[in-house]
Every structure is written in structure tokens, then in C-alpha cells.
Image 1: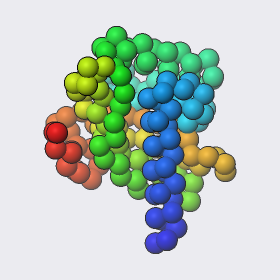
Image 2 (image 1 turned 90 degrees about the horizontal axis):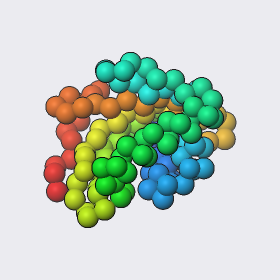
Image 3 (image 1 turned 120 degrees about the vertical axis):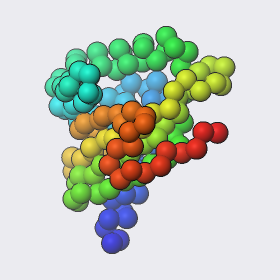
Length: 146
């Protein structure tokens, strides 16, 4: 069980570092947090694969542009849950609140990430969203609105 907890702690620390870099709009930290290739999976668009650094930069630019147009200022982590699958593979659930510049809530998201350790660092290999009212694996309750 100690190895399981160690992996879970490492993955959680990785994700918090990723969110910190995301909030500071540190493109280097964000880019380093993703493996190549990585995939974004949605019900509407299916799988969108980013297989190069150029793809990754376009993905980041589109995503940041879209949320900034809505007044995004930062994202806060409400809940994290990690399920190690192997020594170098885990699933991470993150409940996140996006806040506008005026402090109001822009959106509440539940995202699932598959992450792997490349021998040096944890990296995101896929991400998808469980849209309310769907809970995703484990049927974990979402954090109460604050």
C-alpha cells in the first residue's frame, strides 16, 4: 500500500504544479505537463490528438483564448482523487472551478486525466470531462457549491 500512496502523492503534486503553471499562464510548465502524443476526448468531437509541439502550442493557444474571452482569471482545485494503475500509470479526477477576474464563478468542471511517468516526470497522456449531471467513474459526489 505504501507504493500506491507514494504514486498518488506524486501525481497530486504534479497536478497542483500544472494548475499553478496554468494559472500563471506559464506555457513552458503547461507544455512540459503533457506527453506527446496526447489526446483530448469529448462526446462531441471524439478524439483530438496532439502529436507535435506545434499541435500542443495550437491547443494551448485556442484553450487559453477561449477561456480568457469569457473573463477567466484563475482556476481553483476543489477536489483531487488519484487511482494508481501501475508504477508509471494513474488516473486523476480533478474538480475545478474557473473564476472570472471579478471573482465570480465562470464554470465548474470535472476532468479525468490519464497520466504516466516517463521515467523522470508525470505527464498527461489524455484528458476528458464528465459533464454534469454525469459523475464519471466511481460516482464520487461533486464538491458542494460554495
